[in-house]
Image 1 (cartoon, rainbow, N blue to C red):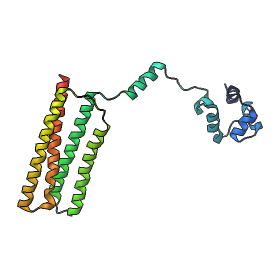
Image 2: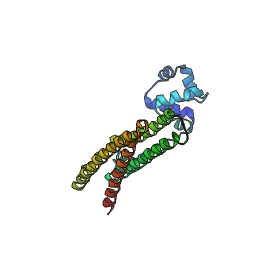
Image 3: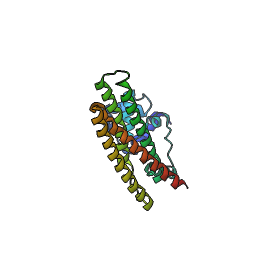
Image 4: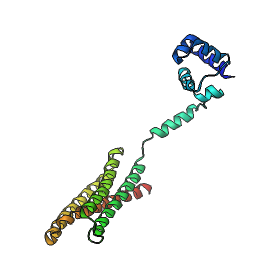
Length: 221
């Protein structure tokens, strides 16, 4: 089937007259008639408007080939895959990945600040700015992840482990604060001792990661 016949059938299928098509495409009725009788072909800038008017693709207009239609089974399968929520196991593994990489960034930031200022003599302001960017990036990754993951009902074992972790986390926080004040008052290096809190946060995340890996191993058993 040539383009003229295709355009004729499309117009008839829409129940439009040549005058109506001409008005919608901003051409004359004679132009539409010439297209349908193959006396001329639509200009390039009219191809898209024609396709939009008749609800077809350019490939269908120019080659007569219709796009392959997906079967109901294929469509349903794609919808299920798109809408399928993450399983509890997948969430745990994703959380472990985010926490482990964030811990690495925390450690990297501490190593960076410990080397660049006293050893490489970098400007403290610039070094601190880079340090805060790395720490901020790691923190944002953790916050973004935990705000986006679905919530699951926790088992008794998970609730127990969470309670234990909170107690350990509280102890780590207390020890970190104590070390901070002891070191700060001893060395008077207040401009750098705040790094201790970052180290404390990294330790807390390492403990959290160990709990995640333990849960993951228990689920696989």
